[in-house]
Image (cartoon, rainbow, N blue to C red; front, side, top):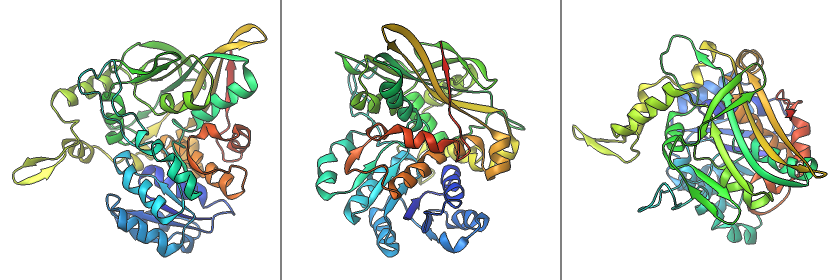
Amino acid sequence: MKVLLVGVGGVGESIAVIASKRNWLDLMVLADYNKARAEEVRAKLPDPAKFPAEFVDAGKQEMIEALARKYKVDLIMNACDPSFNVPIFDAAFNVGCNYMDMAMTLSEPHEKDPYKQTGVKLGDYQFERAEAWKKKGNLALLGLGVEPGMADIFARYAELHLFDEIEEVGVRDGANLIVRGYDFAPNFSIWTTIEECLNPPVIWEKGKNWFTTEPFSEPEVFDFPGGIGKVECVNVEHEEVLLVPRYVKCKRVTFKYGLGDEFIGILKTLHLLGLDNKEPIKVKGVEVAPRDVVAACLPDPAHLGPLMEGQTCAGTWVKGKKNGVVKNVYLYQVADNKECMDRLGCQVVVAQTAFNAVIGMELLHDGIWQGSGVEGPEAFDPVPFMNLMAEYGFPWGVKEW
């Protein structure tokens, strides 16, 4: 398989490192706006010849298309912030190759009633083009990271193998990670974190479909495995709520994230000051987006690994009935930062996101997952994916009560 990897930040680096260990990979082009960063990652890999480094502006569709044609790639892997999804997605369509991302095209809140009604939903742009992709015979596989991605696969597995009927699917994410030497250092893209945490969270309910609520609403304490313990989680906008109901029969879908009071307070302050704005403003004659300034002021998550300690848990809680008996199941993956650093040289949050995309590539290469059109991970058999997780160093677990 030949892959054009657009974006070589923390997750992009992890994708390259993990894929470099797999025999099915013939070529992976490391394309980034910062070519020096792509070269830095290339130098770490065991066979640099398989990983050419290229400059790309992910906002310029024609540049992405030119690279895809130059290397005759089978798949364009989008590892950029989701603000670039449209040109990368459209480039893959025009070139006629498959596409994969880890987060869908962005939402736009309802103009008049943002905390009750949806406006443009996550992924709407992509799903509106599903028929055109199907007619062309190519596949756009959306949301194949950890959340969304692995969490969606767990939901589908639960429906097929653990339940007769499902009341609720709730993705729950929590961690006990710390970053030594920093009072505030997000371990994932702050651009994406601001987007998903400050937008109106989406909930799906049978009969009501999708609707929104207030950011950080409906706090609940969830007891995470792996030594993490009890963490307060709140509603956050996330792709699983837009994907799972398309494929899994259930009555309710939610996503809640364990952010912590301090982190929520900082996000609220950024919003109050307008520093979450992604539209450029003029500062001393220079146009700059406030959110980009915030990102530039914070440490790069890709280089935080040596300073991080702890574990992170991603998983899917499902409530329903089996043989008439009510039960709760939490399917999860716990990853440890030290183990990820020792084994991959990448910090835990980006590594836990990246391995899912690489498993997806392998299943597509081997013909185990097949299809055309625009699909989420739930469209495919979850068992082959879950069987590979331990081999990739990220075994899954299950907790039942």
